[in-house]
Image (tube, rainbow, N blue to C red; front, side, top):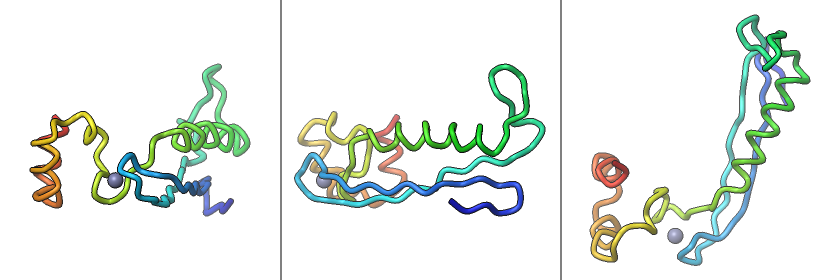
Length: 103
Ligand SMILES: [Zn+2]
């Protein structure tokens, strides 16, 4: 845990297997700032501990998500037809194509 000014952040790390069988690790930073607008559900201003708790919940959700390798790193990849996947595998590095499939 690192505290920088009024920013609270925690780092997440996970290793998993993609649906295609490749292993991949991922890191993600979860961050929120301590400020008067960051409030709890009861309306009180979040303390650093409140934020840490919220970040821990967020991190937990992220840890549960399926991990994808670089080639399949698209949420709907496995929902595509085999033809679409083939097309994506050839052209998927183009961000606009990726976006097209995500719509
Ligand atoms: Zn994969």
